[in-house]
Image (cartoon, rainbow, N blue to C red; front, side, top):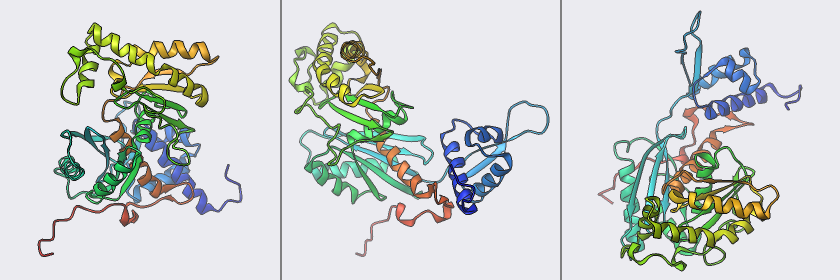
Length: 378
């Protein structure tokens, strides 16, 4: 609540923040009456705030297309800003990239797989090439921030530093666990939920946490990052049908595809794998007590094989078990989450309850750098 004696300037800034937040979360342009319900502000106050946000370059309005008597009402939405944020997921087998607008629309997705045994320098070069492909045609527009999702180990940290030096913007480093969990919260099976346990079933299964609407990494960044060697069994520890194993490193996707098509051997092996992770999932769920458990990762296309198993196991051990759902996202989930986390940081820098909304022209210069041509004279 804002006290009656509050500084009028603070009230204006708070109102800007509230209106901006409602417009950002709205799925369609809003009438003043709808904004009034969402913000609690009067029509007169909203008119002043909307004019101010329009003058700052953030809000646009058009006449409503609804067929009503009288003069068509104006509807308001956030103006699409130039440039984008990037989300990068650099894994063991591939790098994936997402280009996203500041209002959260994914524009481009791209993927390049690493050759087996490729060096760190070769991987850096591949990442730089992929970023160029994602930005093709819009090289002169700003990249506000790049989110880079990596595994939490010394080798990945060193690789991340080399990649960061080759990106066209300042970089936000995040763990792939937090990026994946955030993507589930924004667009995936946990959309709308703030207390989430993500069970990522892939090459190295792990658990991700979202509590009170924030990814949790703990004091040292390890909370919720429980890979196969500490708690969850990995795919390489399981027995898989020989006829489904390929020489290339992507055989897991062949097994998933076969199980999805109903191949009996693949379904049986995948179900066995789901049963193997049950004890760890039940144990973690009992400790965290999330609202939703999401089954994701490389096995998400056939996660339905494990949903009933998890529901049954949790029901036996918990009086009020959480909802269990499939992810709904694909292999781009970590890159998607990294882009959303980068977008959130950019918006937090220009939109706040105490400072209101900065004009576009006042966006901090250090938030982006345009790609520079190589200096041939150097």
